[in-house]
Image (cartoon, rainbow, N blue to C red; front, side):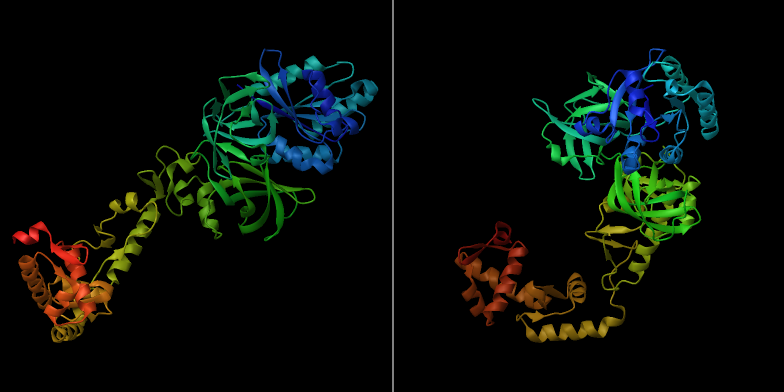
Length: 560
């Protein structure tokens, strides 16, 4: 099973020297690292184990100024190699790195007590004993990168530690956090990172988040070797044609389309090393991403993190929270929560109540990392997934609006949401055009009879002259009842007047082959505007069509 080992430990305790002795590769690749003799950025190397297995090694800097880089390297590893100088013992960054590993849930590993050749036996034994007390239950191996003492024992210990690692990420959608981007002549842009979950092969289409850009993988390498497909837990290099180097960088994630949400908020459970107050501003780290975050407490261990930069997150992800030092860690319960804090909701999620995570319909693919095959209390419609409670709330809200609607038109507009076409058929309502109605609902005047009668009297007095009607719903109702005909611009005429104008049009057009606006106006004895509105309605009704300055009858009107 592919695994990644991450180093940890204080500056100058020999992490890079030890990796070089174990793997034969110098992970300090930057000129400044070699000039200053300290690690500044992440380094990588393959390590052969005694049983023939192979693991990837991530070497992290030990200086306190580069803890953020250490966190980027440690998130995604499967086991640790904690390095402690035999002469100095545990130092500040030893303790902080160890705390970060614990907050990330990385429990298996090996402690290497380095520079064994530089101390006497009694000091070495004391250093090993202190290491066992610091990290109980983990093998402690004294080594010397300079002489090679203990290296084979250390390799064997790492092999035993690897046997106990349980990887559960391989069955999740593909996700790789980018930690390095560069260009190669003839190849183009290359990104590297630890493949957190899923697999990647040549030809795969991925999304670069949080930008949402689609990218295609041309080739895949694992430690400089071409592979057909990389698996979760491996260090991976991907060639991405058509992508500029500046378009991707550390903190971006390459993910399977629809596999993970991108969010500015995370509901989490908090583990504090130091008190973190409500409203506190901290640096949040997830994968190789980091962002300023505001801590919004929902009660007890439950917190919502509001981020300055969106994270690509999944339930169960571990987040490190830092100020000047590491303040604590958090486990993601909901990667797409509503903005309001709600302790009861978060507690439900922690209990495994998936329905509590869904405050409105979301695309099912975006919760594949969270939703089981048939979670309790969850409904599906097409590609959408939502809680049964939400559906009941939606039904109640729509019903209330329809019951309160104007009786002349008791319908309400369809929700302008992408899920509407799939979800609304589940509800016991009638859809008529662009509106929803209660079953069997029909228009009625109720208390507006007098208003309708007054409008009819006004239209009758106006004859074929168009009358402005301000109440469109009332006009629609009377038209449906055959009592008026609506014209453009909110105007109308009585149904009888419309028939009079229609007879004039048909008689003239049949006799003369057509009719002009001026001729129609004169025959009606009305104004130009009124004649124009009536002719446009005849066009809309399929009686006439305009040819130049005249209206001619359509075939059906000529024969009737």
